Figure 1: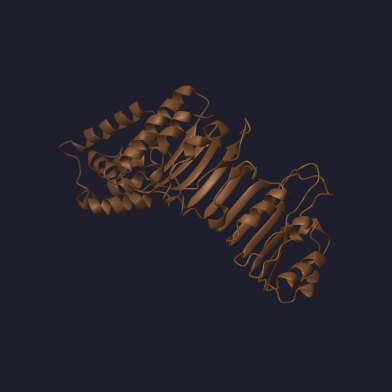
Figure 2: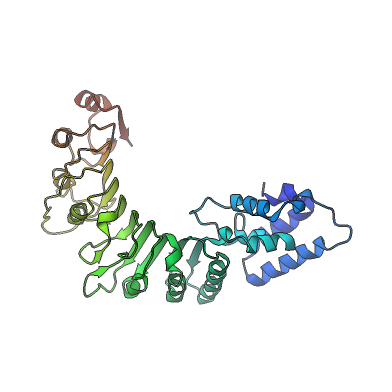
Length: 363
């Protein structure tokens, strides 16, 4: 049941449902607000105790009503901060004056140019109302709108969490200072391919956690690898994985999903990782070349502090797992293996590695 129904009574329920079914157009929101204010101003309108709460308490309730930061609320409908502006004049004033309600921004640009204009205006509204709060931004594009990115970058010094899809021709826009940035999900469209390597986020001293959501070419894009503690890369070739591990020596949690790269595979010597505690290695869904597997990478890893290991392909055998544990002298607590990658039963793994407390064969 929505928050405002039990607080304000059944009189508002029908109006609230109509708001939730609205298209999201600003004119509709204005009309709905006027209707709520009209009801509120009626002489015989009932008195609700909730309206006597101090604004500070109401603000706290409003913030708790939204998804937990840094998750972004929907732009419209239930759990949107705009909904809180549509109940009555009193709540609207409190919502607009609560910057924490507007600090997480989700913009989805459709292929319809008119909607992109509306989304830009919404972004400006969110940014203005968020005051000086750190920001969590999530830009999900069906097509691309440069003006939206430019507008958001004007506030890059407040970016704390960012989920971005960036085209190569616009990479220069994000080569700016981001002193608060700590979590980044980055999707790149490298078409056209940059003519020379590009360095990104070198002015983001607190960036520790990165998700590479699309295919990534380390030879073309440089990130501050040495300061990262968490890395999740969805589409990397084996050489890219190894090259990143050569530079990202402070990783604590790492997950690689590899893709095929045709031609010879040269794996560089990977330094010992003393900080890595959790590692997951997977082949991509379209990785059909059985002659190319993750064992070439796995044989080059020495991880003395590893606690959790997940390996999901047949190229990493029981023997290679034993060699890795002996080489690393690590005390594994958990081993996760893809059941479909081989015909070994759980009992065989437990017999081979009796010191590992948790062994899971995943479907």
